Every structure is written in C-alpha cells, then in structure tokens.
Image (cartoon, rainbow, N blue to C red):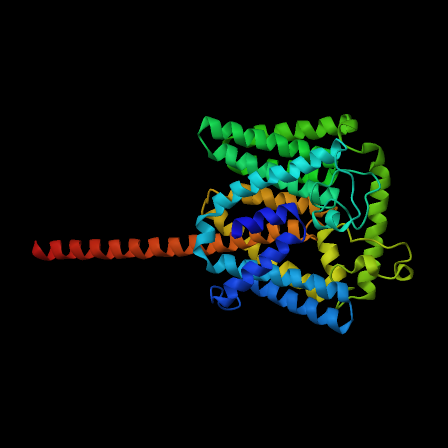
Length: 404
C-alpha cells in the first residue's frame, strides 16, 4: 500500500492524499504509531496542525480548516517514519519507485507540450492535476501537478535523485538507465519553463557535487561559475527571459502585499491556503494565490505563532544534517542537495503548498531525523563496545602484571 500511495500521489493531487490518510489511519488503529513522536519535527507539526485547525475554526476560514487536514497527514507520516524500521531499510527502494513513477508525470507533461492533452476544466482534469484552479496565462506544461512551478520543483528533485543513484551504482546497465532518467527529468523541467525550479536544480547539483567530490571542489566551483557567467552574458538561454523584468516587478508587489497582510493579521495569520480568498480591498491590489516565498507564505497564512513553529521544526532538521555531516554519512551530499533545491526555489515560490510536493518534502525531513536517530544509536553502541574492550584489555594487563 505504501508503493500505491507514492504512485497515486505522483499522478493525482488528491487521490494520493486520500490513500495516505487511509494508510495512516490503519496504522494508528493497529497501534503501529504510538505516541506523539519524540522528535522536534513531529512535535512541531502537531502543534502547527492544532494551531491551524483551531484558528481556522474560530475565524470561520473553512478552506483553511480543510487544508489543515494536510498538516495532520504530514504529522502522521513523520511519526510513521520515526516508528517503523521497515521504512528506513527500504528507503532506497522507495526512491527507485519514485523515479519510475515519475516517468508517468513526465509523459503527461510531454503530451501537454505536443498538444495531445489540453487543460481540462472538468472534474477529472482537476482530480489528476491536468487542470488548474488558478490558470497559467502562459500555458506552460503542468504535468500532473496543476501548476508549472510545482511540476518544475518535482522534476528538479527527480533529476537530482537520478544523479545520486547514477553515482551510487557500479553496474553499467543501471548507470545508463539512471543517466537516461536524469536527462528525461531535466528535459521535463525545461518544458515547465520554471526559472525558480531551474535555479533550484542548479543549486542542488552544485551542493551535491561539492560535498561528494571534496578533492575536486575548485574545479566544481569553476565549472558552475563559468555556467553562471555564460547565462549572464547570454540571458536568452534562460526560459521566458523577456518576461524577467515583469516577473521581478510582480514578485516585489506580491511580497509587499503579503507583508501588509501579515501586519494586519500578525498573530493568527489569514488562514492556511486562504490567501487567494482574502478580500481584494484588504490587499489593495488583487487576489493572490500565495506569497511566492515559502517562509513569508507560512508567516502570512499561520501568523507569527505558525511561522515560529515552522522555523523551530527546521532548526532540528538543520542540527540533524550537521550531525550526519560530522559522522560522514554517505547520504549527506544528496540530502543537502535536495534541501538546496527546495530552499532556492522557495525563495521565489511556495513550493511545498501542494500536498504532492509537500509530502515529498515532509518525508525527506522525517528521513533526516530518523537517520540521525539511527546513526547516534549505532555510534552509542560502538562506544559501549569500545569501552568494554578497553576495560577487558586493562583487566588482562593488570592480571598479567600481577602474575609477573
């Protein structure tokens, strides 16, 4: 059922969420997910879900109340990852399954680009991410995500994941397969024309290779710097470059509006996913879908309380990543690269607003904290064995000295 949840989440913004809820409810009913969760991430998500639910009910923001259910799902996913040992052992298999299912979303995106699939305004179109509640005036491909920028975020993550598996395997056939997947997802990313997602992938690849090949860091910096200079000299290589000044002006205006909204609702926020439904008179501009910046969006929608909880949760993730880096864990480069993708793209977009991308992100954060726990327990076990060995050695030496 876990594999079905991953596949359904990729192909539909809603079916995957329904399956995830069903899966978690079954686990809770079986007693497989005891307790609140000891990690800061689980506690933070629980507090965030409670805060969003209560404030939405009190302020009668029914859209936000419905969206709060997604936060409860995220919390359940994190608690599940913390308690089920099977998840950690099979994480590599789950990653391969994600890459395989991602081909379906890439195929849908290609069909959209070729004009075989038009944007549907019927229920089936919304159900499978073929139609968007906020239409894209540029008619970019959205694959199964209903939004070009969300599709771009998804394909950038898949491209980096394929690069990681490419460097991890030694089998020629598998290497070629991962290389092909990486090219497919980079091509799909370019079709979305999402500049933020392209920048996120560039940052993710740089961080990944920088931490993977430590002896080649000067060369890696030189290569990425040369690529940056090339794009600065020939900006036409970037998608939609003619709209860059207009996009920058639009982003600045949206950020100003959202900051004004935050000042109007500093404690409780306007409600989760409720930005689009705020009265246009209050914004003084027009209705906006979201803040186009992840941290700003959280503070606008959930207020200072929700924003502080969000940052507190992530501080625990940062500490866990630093711990794993000190332990020289082999997954650190790809984890840092994936978080770099989300962070850089999140500067100009609200990349985790949709359950599809948000679920991938939450699973990633949950995996980091669970990995921290496993590595620390293993190091503690090795330290106990080392102390026992040293104690036995001391006793043997003392016994030998006494015999002499």
